[in-house]
Image 1 (cartoon, rainbow, N blue to C red):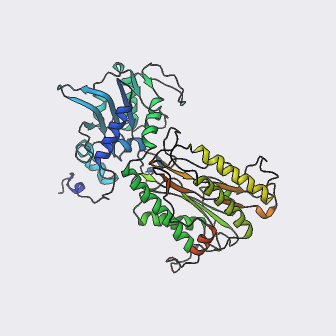
Image 2 (cartoon, rainbow, N blue to C red):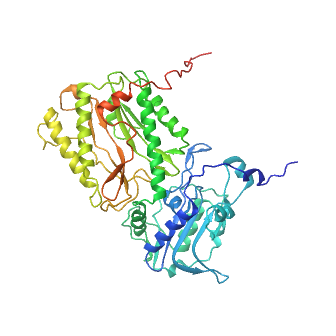
Image 3 (cartoon, rainbow, N blue to C red):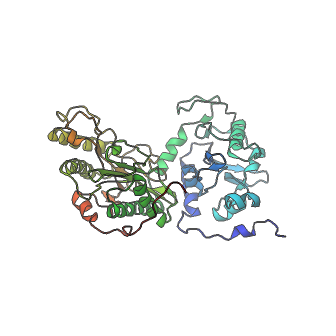
Length: 476
């Protein structure tokens, strides 16, 4: 009889380019240095999300917790202390991490766990414990001037059989801190004076908005993977493809490079669907030769996500109207790019791009004058990227090693108050940038940006041209 144990779980092959333990230790130290005197910060793992019945979504960690620990499992809480704390044996520590324990029966069904011993060995967080130990963890939160954490969303399921699950950890934390209830606003006034729901947002934003060399390396990879996806779709594009098929080509490229996730739901908008800014259905069964397809996708690689958009003509050739709108968006992006350097606010890029677009729309007769109010360019053009596609920041001027996007767009939905020849045209061009000492590096340059370069790329043969599958048939 086989004895169920951990031996069959130990050997495993994993990618070797995840961030190392010393990176995460450095980030914890950097946060500690910014924390107020006599404070403690608490970070919880993301909840497990149910997809349907007994099937859950693939788990994705809270980016802050991953940033600080490298831990990718659920049901955990991290405490970081500003000053050293004393344990019952007279030793000192500055952090405590409670993680889900090893469980051979569960691991056979749902995957390997590090356990507290694995966290000590692999992640070098020596003061780690089983999450079930948190209930009896002796700590007086009243002694701290500040207890820093994010407000709870009250959307965590309770596994009544597990006193170490996230629901239990949150309940136990609330009990230990005396936290009763608060609104979801950052301006909430909690019941106890030392509970602080606001400061941690700013501290983590300050840290995460400037990338370390290790982070820049992973972002480069995520962006390159995403641009390869764009290039392969340009080669493969043909009338009659579905939006879902186009999405599948992008995401196949992501998986070819062992990208773990998409950084956000993929956007494939053909024709008028491109006018929906966050169109995610991607279910149009056939794209027409006279349409353009707006493709906004980003691979997530080792926790870091890209955000790249290209808009291409289905038949490989821009019409006169499509070219006019595309070149106007391109001109707006180029004008904004010229200003990228340390010291500038990202909001300035929106102002620059909007001025170019407004003037161009007026010249094309789509709006009456450059001062005419309209909804054809309804969004800003820049945001940080990193562990989140809209990465945490504090809206400070650009500094070296920030990573961000510039993404102007024009969207003219059917029925707009202009000549119908423009209806259904939607163009967004989005590129990813690294701020350098005196300017920028265009990280997403591998994917063609100009009309001419896109048309030339679309003439190339695709390795998918010969790939066919049997038709679906109904009935017997």
